Amino acid sequence: MSSNIDYTSPSTQFTFDVNDSTLFKKDQQNYINLLGVEQLNTLENTSLLDIFLSKDNVVEPHYHQNAAELVYCISGAAIVSILNPFTKKIENYPIKPGQVANVPQGWWHYEVATEDDTHLLAIFDAPTPEVILGSDILTFTPANIMAHTYCLDEKQWKKTIAPIVPTTYIGPPKNCNRVKSASEKQKESDCKCKHKPKPKQPNYMNPYPYHYPYVYPYGSYY
Image (cartoon, rainbow, N blue to C red):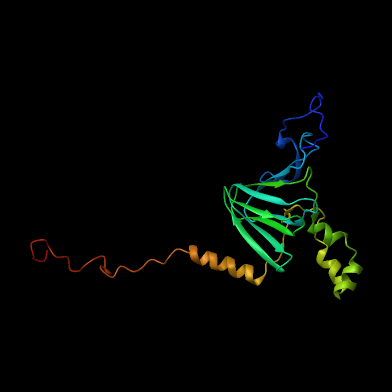
């Protein structure tokens, strides 16, 4: 295997602390660390993202134009969703510790944590994973082009995407006050009903706690 790395150079690196290379941080439970050739100069066609998520947080829809991605679950649980460009369908793959999901190069995808303390390792076959994010596509594409292309009201489109922050990486934003859809409200209601405590049943064996007149133990009234 050919290599342009000078392994005799004193600047050659063979180890690196990924905790020192944060790509994005939403809060203490949701952040992404990066390892690529810029962090470890002996890497060739390998790089990774170290991803930490709490429940219901999402690595936003995106694609990697230069690499395939292998998502390995270390702890917690997540659903890796992929838009298959051949079937035109979203395919959802739940993964738990020890399980993987593979995303081919250039395929649109996203990851949703279904448990707290979810830890994912995304491994790429490129020295640095390049990415195009959904938030960037939506915010940087001119509104007049979107309106003209898809026959939209330009003002309405601008209003709709106004809350989107470019380069979101992990959503939803901390200040999200989105009005929930009817289906989401119904789902929450169904969940609450499953955990609602059952009402106490009346005690038909002894409906009256006292008996009058009092009966003396030996059979005569006292």
